Amino acid sequence: MKRVLTIQDISCLGKCSLTIALPVISALGSETVILPTAVLSTHTMFNNFTCKDLSDQIEPIAEHWKSEQVHFDAIYTGYLGTIEQIDQVKALISDFRDEKTLVFIDPVMADNGKLYPAFDMDYVRKNAELCSIADIIVPNITEAAFMTGMDYREEYDESYIKEMLQRLNAFGAGISVLTGVSLEPGQTGIMGFDSKSGEYFTYQRKRIDAVYHGTGDLFSSSCVGEIMKGLDWRDAMRIAADYTARTIEVTMENPEKPWYGVDFEATLPELMNLK
Ligand code: PXL
Image (cartoon, rainbow, N blue to C red):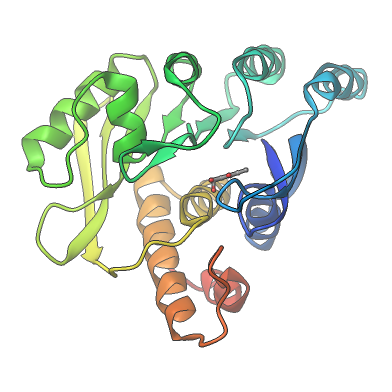
């Protein structure tokens, strides 16, 4: 069985980060090892959330794993808390990665043109540094605009996305993928660039006009899980995009849906059959 280490916060209530990664990657058949970087009462879209930083636990936990000679087939990082923590995570990745380990970085820090509370441009620069050591990065357009210094646009054409992918590619990751890319009216999906083959990959599907929290984490987690099943990254991203959109659709139909996250619990059984 493949073993995935995922490093991100645990928001006790909120359906995001570890509370999505753990069930989704496990459901796709990989052992999921978690490293919580902070415990929050809720995600940061709630008011008055509490947050306990766990940075001082990262090194002792990693040391223990080293003494147990643990091997990870993938290391997947999401929302992290501070610049210092990103340095710790970089060190952990370089300690544990070998030539077969997939390093998948989702530089979670912004959406809809804005940085999340608690982040600033120093944090953005540090995330760009983290992206440089990845095999695959999956920023949304907002995160990529901040990291590349390009203007954030809601209306754009393919040349804007290609320029952004080229600037991301210059950081050094093997594969750079932009999420939330709409190339035709009524459509949305992803566009990626593979630095080895020099090829672009685009996947577009019907756009659903709703914004829900945690959908980026759902996309990344299902993508990592599918790659661990042996799928090519392009197939994994296509399935992850379909699964995320399907989950948004199902969530919208639920009259009792919570405002803070999607009903991925309802669609998880379907994910196992998506091809
Ligand atoms: O879904 C991204 C995410 C993860 N973790 C925390 C967040 C957010 C987005 O706001 O606040 C704590």
